[in-house]
Image (cartoon, rainbow, N blue to C red; front, side, top):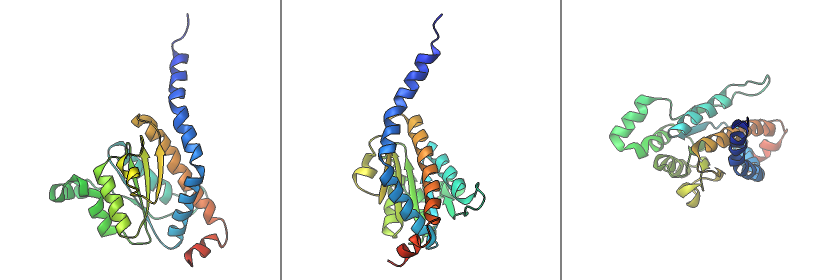
Length: 204
């Protein structure tokens, strides 16, 4: 009796092939992002991460990766998630509206040497957009991990660096984003291991 499992598995892999290949094609973009992130960390900056729904948990995961040196000898890097404190989120939402929950925190917590990383499954989250815009105005390095076609966040160039998971399926977008931010963590440390490279960047 033929199994229905293999066709289902083949279909699942086929749906992920194009987004995976698109991520591989973005290798140079990702490397440049990591270099600039490493330079900001080298100057004493911290990583500030935010997103809605599923990407809110990704924001928390990103922070764990950067602050927790799971490999002996790797540096613990300063990072915070703006999605952790329900009291802060709901308080800002009540006072200023949900679109301001990240921007308001960034204006309070961020410094110009920091990095803002916003995650959005479709590139159309108004509060992620507002957060990236506020971060840019404050002088932060801005990074967007987006899904779909990148939405208005990509179209309006609200981030210095954008990596798009090219799928309309939020589950596939999440898988690509998880892969991407693990690569970001790894490559930031690769740049730390190149003597003098980040010192030259810091003197520019």
